Image (tube, rainbow, N blue to C red; front, side, top):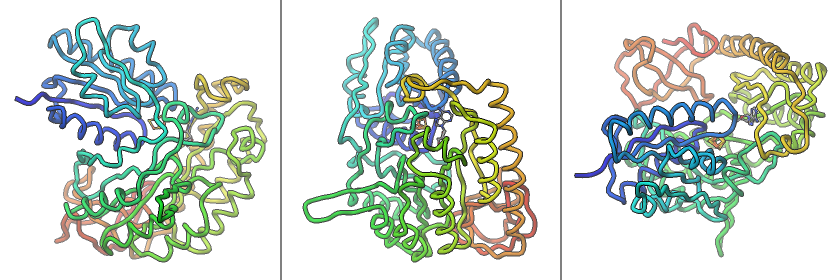
Length: 437
Ligand code: 5AD
Ligand code: SF4
């Protein structure tokens, strides 16, 4: 009988895709996937280190896994992903994990699993300069069978001073363009209608062979050419790297969705400099203006950090006025969290008091909620094309699906089925959903 593997995934979409790669590697080692933790022979958490509270959650899960192990002797408990790489020693010291594997070492899982014995936990957290798992076909774990995620690159070469990713995921490397196109063709043939190309900084994608050089715009074009009814999305873009070529390529292909996630982090040029983002407020606003000039209906979302080192009330105001000026559809908003090993941690003071950070964060959230509602309201009366994803979570009598601009739409179930495209008219909205007919 096959052994069963259970994996919980935390953190970003790239981690979700890594879990799919891990399942594929485990299949080769005689494991099958289970969604029932109680039935597993191997339980793992694919972890995230980006903010302290993400790590705190994992320590709690390790306790839960160990309670399960006390009932099921022989159960293997593993920690993989960003936290494995960052906290290997601490994890092994607890004696509560048998396996610690970093983001570039998943191919060693079968070997490490063989070698586990009582009292001899196994570890591999080496980072690689060329691992992209290009030849591995991920085991899709999404529930709907419509939207698939494809990693096009790994790691990150930017050293934003607050960010732990370059340390947990290593240097940037781009995956073989042909293997990406093959994977996208493969999911399309399996019935998927949407692919999202993933990378920490997709705009710096660059793959070279002896005969070709493929940049991100070229890659988008190749994936868009697979089929007119295959939607193409991507994340995440970097304001310093998003090029006119990418913007024009998006505009030229109806099946490339008109949505850009463009993390701004702060509206203050002084903070952006200290954050080492390599752009300033004016540059960011110019990129937004270009996007809107070429694609007036393009959805724009962002990430914002409140209370980074030395942030003054004026810097904070700059963030608010930028958000007011741009009018994002949606934002992920965070209070700054000091991460060990980062440039900020080593050279700057985390000097905005927690209370003040939260006060600023709340102001940011309040402003964004108002802006989201404005942006969604502006869609009322419009006709949008949505890809039907399935029943709406809130009301199973309704269907839901996203418009090209990434806004979620709900509409009566009529005759349209999951995976088809349909035209809807927007009648009403909340700050996160368009209510349509
Ligand atoms: N503290 C708070 N937020 C952070 N992010 C990254 N590092 C930190 C940190 N140390 C946020 C950024 C990034 C998103 C994925 O997480 O906004 O874009
Ligand atoms: Fe978390 Fe960043 Fe790692 Fe993704 S890459 S799991 S967001 S630390």
